[in-house]
Length: 282
Image 1 (tube, rainbow, N blue to C red):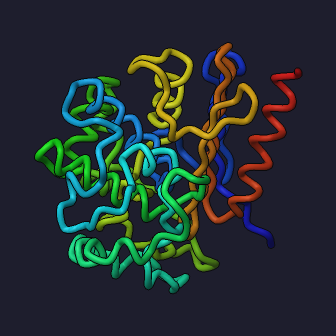
Image 2: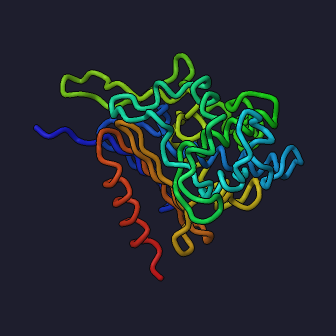
Image 3: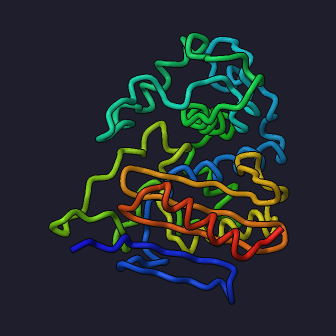
């Protein structure tokens, strides 16, 4: 018998309408993958607004082991750094980021110039490595670990500090994908250097609130360049080994957040696209 894919859809239809299938729960902690980048990008904008750094600072100002490459924080923020998508050595599909520790990342810095695939600023190329380095630079500039600065500058002002974490809080309800015997499937190790690029856990309800506060309400100012743009739609997605998510909103107020376990990330994006087509006709 085919197992249903646990799915949570929260949207602006009605009053923040929420629909779940397959045992999903909008108040349980789940992996949000690269939606973590939205938190990181917003933190960068907040630190720049507070004068803690400039987005045009070269990376080597804050990560001093790195050579002068021409890569700036802005390049990392908008994926134009010229760095590859993945850190070297992340080839295992079973747990690709397990070896990408803080020590491993700092070990790469001295040879960062050899990793560039094109001139910084010349063209976009989505980079998890770039966001890992951006998170490390923010931590250096703010003199505190990434998770602490994300909490102080983004999550606490939005009243979401208790609903996002590198590890679900003890005693909280946690949802992960299940195998055929009902056992929880292993998740990737994402709490090391890759955390700012894709390691956060959060509840779907809180992630939907992050989306609406940042894009619809502009509670922290203009949305960060992290958000992808498709005409008027601002969106970002995320995927880990067995989880996928999509968050998107229009300036007029229509929005949707989808989180799924076990199903393909492509299908998650397709569900979002179908919703967008239905509620927002040109």
